[in-house]
Image (cartoon, rainbow, N blue to C red; front, side, top):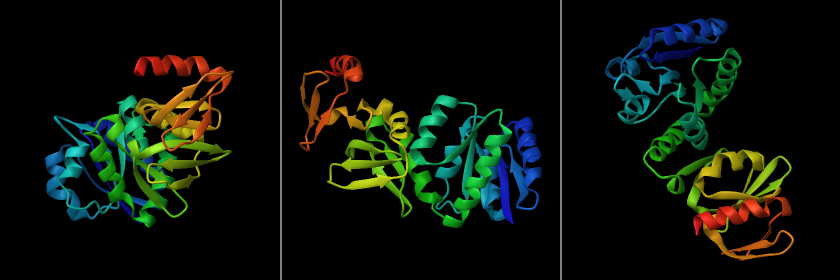
Length: 249
């Protein structure tokens, strides 16, 4: 049986999660809930939870304040937040689960299914460390949590030179000459890294604009990266690419 707690300052949100958990009464036991970070820090760990539903904003503090006070994080966390833009980027970077308020039933069920698997894996501490670190950094200095065949790789964004698509897989090329194969589409990486100076120059290629050494014009043209990779720029992306480059330089 998974033991769960809720940390949220809004009673109606607590009640909503409690109601949704009734669907999992044979799998998850709600052992406590808290309406402040201080109360949670004082009592929550004594409950030895496996899962914490954690609000991002709790009165004048945040869920991150709660996590930063812990020496280790021996439980999984599902963040709950009304701040969509922040959630999508910060939580995707760290591969931490989140639910947008008001919580959708299907989203909740999917999150529980995923977190049940993760509890067995016990890899949450590293992902939270990435999340907390990213909260204090600019886009270029952030880390990304990458699911691989072996588990997770924690990679600094500014070490990624480019990503190359192979149907439903993506190969990441890094400054240390690593090639990391990930079972995620290039579109997934494009959405994740679009605000970090990455540009999809071709249907199969997403590049870090910081590593461009040269651009040669042509029908679409091509770029030379500083690792000497030559990447074609598709004709339909050429105009947008040139405008983006002009804005940067």
